[in-house]
Image 1: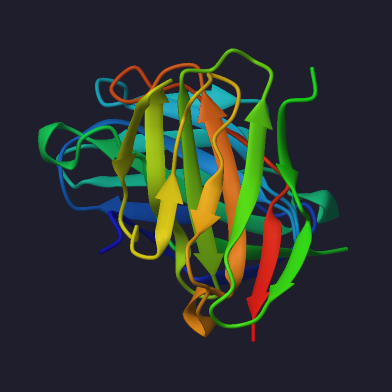
Image 2: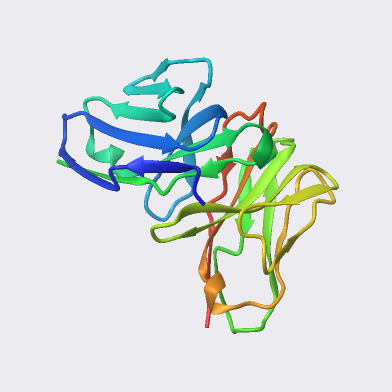
Length: 113
Length: 115
């Protein structure tokens, strides 16, 4: 079963608006990562947040982590058409799952010019 | 650096055929992994390796074999292809695996169709 689940599954916004997508997971984690995938391409790493961090910024990206709710959010501010892609969260769970990184099902973001 | 390379980019197999998907990285990464991506399913881990000579199963290992004889290469073998293995396959690498995991670098993918 998937460790991470993104919400919403699809999101369509106007250029310049902010986009927020959420990730929920089931078990305790060491860290959580967000990746972007452009159509037909491999995934590209965006940001990593550790379990003892609550917020992290990278350019127009802002990630929050709430370990008590087992959830994370990715905010893209001032979106551009080039942000159109699928976004995935990935977690490495502690202990029982071993040395594995588990991906969610993704959020498809469409930014309209 | 070339990063993570995968060959072939596209492949069509008949049911029952075998083949090897190649993956190589030139970043001296210890951790390598194979995922398959199906519509609506996200990425699912097939096999992974934390270093040369060490491999382990992921979420969906049945029908696939791996080996890691060198740090650079991590081939994925389909033993007897089935239509259910039609998918896009991604190889990824990272300097270390969990719990020291940093960002993973992904290859461009191999699109496999089994008829």
